[in-house]
Image 1 (tube, rainbow, N blue to C red):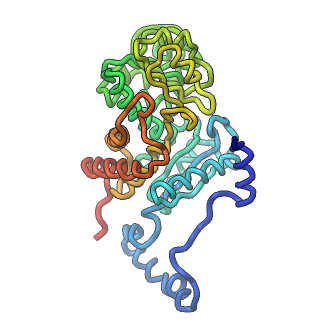
Image 2 (image 1 turned 90 degrees about the vertical axis):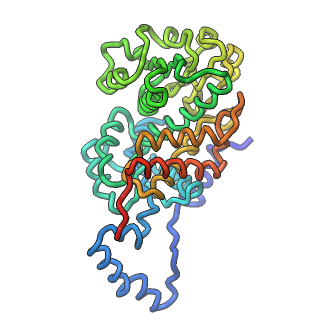
Image 3 (image 1 turned 180 degrees about the horizontal axis):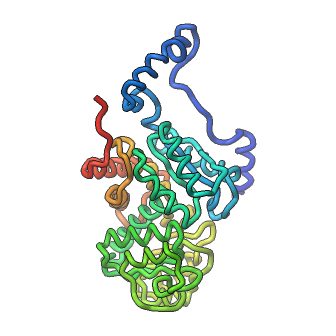
Length: 391
């Protein structure tokens, strides 16, 4: 069996990382140099100076995304800083290129100040067609993303919305398999950080406030806890929740669906047994889920999903973000709206005929990107959240 940790260390050291820049043109003569640099390049700069919108036609900006992090919440490793975050952001850039044909660059910031991060993102925006915020801890990530929604290019925190899109798609298909209506379901979400917040709000939006959603954190059931912080209180004001009090044990009793985006081994066999018939369990903590899938099934769960590739029903963000950004960039979108995200989830769900062990396509299925991109592009154009054409 391959030791992926050792393999990754060896490959990264041998290659000096995963990324390099390549050129679309050759510089083999003085004529080439004069065309692509000076003096010829001045004509391109003058044209863009006269009409800024020409930058989208005459440079690589239209197909380039910044992957921005402050290193504060990396891969479940925690606040490990910008240097340690770099290989993860580079990995994200590789996925953008390989799955969606989008050029992406890791931008690792040596600051965790909200104001500074917002200012930096605004300052670098002229070089990019979109910004993928990544591995920034809650609740700062909410404020950063909110303040960047009107800078003229799509900005999305993938830990929130990429996760939420894939989870919603998986729920749409899982509820089909067990013959339940998501709008009638009682849902327990363990963890109300970046991912848990976005999941709760997206499910609520999709079900038109009909599903019952009970978020739980380390202090217990959030919406009946008066000590919950302002961001968690905002979530509670937006969703339909029950009035139960207690901890995870109480929240999961009678639930149709458990979604874990929290920590390993929080959900017990007895808790799953207390859930409704044909329960759905998404234990998404990585690398170790909230419950072992075999234990969950033994306890009566009909469908079990994790974030791991070595179990059926992997919930992986790579199924969402390449297609979302590809569709947004092709539409010339200025933001990524709720309608665009839900359209992405519906397209992802429709990409597979669901069964108990197949509620999502294979993460390596590149056809999924095109399906999502088309849906997102249509949604952006229908909402008119696109740039005007440069005339």
